[in-house]
Image (tube, rainbow, N blue to C red; front, side, top):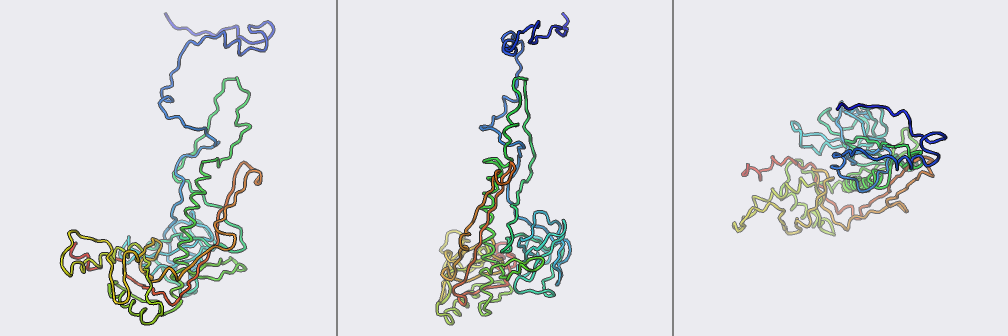
Length: 422
């Protein structure tokens, strides 16, 4: 029998003279209708159902993250250049502190830290140009380092703002995201969707908003740590155009304030570089040598490998090759695993002999990581706004007790300790 299709001429509507009398039209009609077909929803049934409800009008799916920001020079940065050209200024903002990192000649993996230069971004001028403050306390116009294009990496490492300026808006990173929407399905029973009266904030609870706050809590101490190590003291000038923010001096800057503290290696480091320093400190400083070396993890590796040829000199008693750090005792001091500390923000080519008692840091009054939130009632919109910041400083309490090794070659293949194993 052929299947036919027909329109029923008598539509069951409510009203005088029609099929369903008066107000209970949907209910009465529902009782009268009998379901004739079961429609399976295999794909929907197969998918995992979300445990909670969607609170966002626009549902953003993807990575919420806080990346390390870096680019490369698009043109040479010369001895007087303060407007520099980079591959892209995306994500870089006025107030960011940057570092120029140059590769060793012929290398695309090893940076020559003797050529590293800090600067502060004063303004973003275009998608590829920005004006920076390069003086940083010791360099001046006409004496800046010349950084070649393409082989110089520019990294954002911290931030510095003027005392009388409002905070910048927080950056939101969304990565490889795609935007999804909710879709309203209706059958004539309800008058309007709840979204008409419940317009949720895009930054809903437990969404990207809260994650962004946590990312800032992780990133800002990292930026502060960089300043405590690498900061170059600069006296700001908020009356200048553009304004120049104040910057604190870090541990390396403090050590450099006394010329006798600096010990130029300018090449490969060896065991005797340290023994000479211990003797010098025991002779010339009432507190003797410091008890802690600070260095980049790369130098910890070099130091450990450097000691390999000396191991077993009194007899090959070891049953395995131990490439961990070995304590080296001298007549006036020792370098031990406990006293050799590393930080990945420490410059690769520098090491500092110091003591924990020589340093202290703290926040400005009432400004130890301040968090401020504005809610829709204050903003007059279905959004939230927040900011987070802190104001800190540090001092060296024993300035002449520092010894800073500089110019250390960090190319591991140049050290003879590797030769027998290659």
